[in-house]
Image (tube, rainbow, N blue to C red; front, side, top):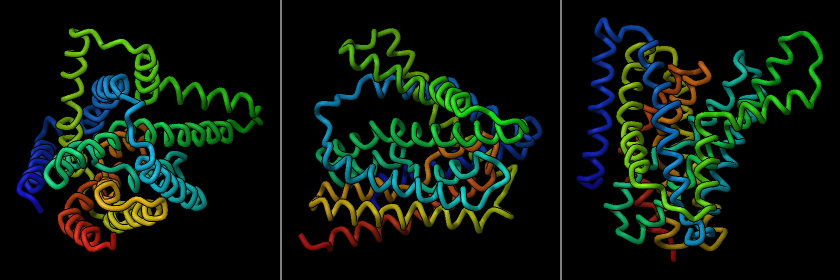
Length: 322
């Protein structure tokens, strides 16, 4: 592990620890403080980040072949987890999508960008940034559609009366589009199509708001960890962490190999898929008020385990035949 990557991991744990310590004090006691911080990130700061990122994507220059090799197996794996969880008929309708988010959404920005820069140079960093530019757009939008559909169905069942399919579809579409994650992405894409640059003063505000997302989320993870702890969630969190760190990169490696990717391109997308669970998973869990303790534990455990799994994946990729 490079010194840069080690320092990034250390910074993550220190920030989470600060949140945990704050959660042991009276002003932040209880789970509500973590939820308030997470809601601030979800409704204010993350939308600014997503709008700006989407509005600035250069769609024409993206390496679509490599991106397809990354997103097809990643989305496919998340759908497998989602469907498997739905078969278990959980008490909360949002649980399948939340667990799918935890098993599939990686920390590709805060941890992935310095990793790509340190290990792969400018060419590898550019490819990784292409993954980052579409990561939230594709994964969060997909899971938002699924969770809103499940919630609409649950509401229809709990009403005790037959709800027309058209009404359920309207509710799903409305709640999916009018959403603090999906709406800024759609607005950013619409701005992107115009070809206009974001005006300087507005861009500065967006940059300032977007910069706050990561520290807010990390402190919220610490607060949540202090409130829920690992007791009772370690087992389920461990399999979600294993799904993220082991199964998902194996699928990306296999699919990318079948598509003919080799060398740097294959290494970058596999390592992007091998990132630990990202903080957005906790935002998602707290948005739908389900699996908050489990998601927190999975983020912490997967980030800890990443220190061992990342070198293992790199060693495997270096020794692959050309």
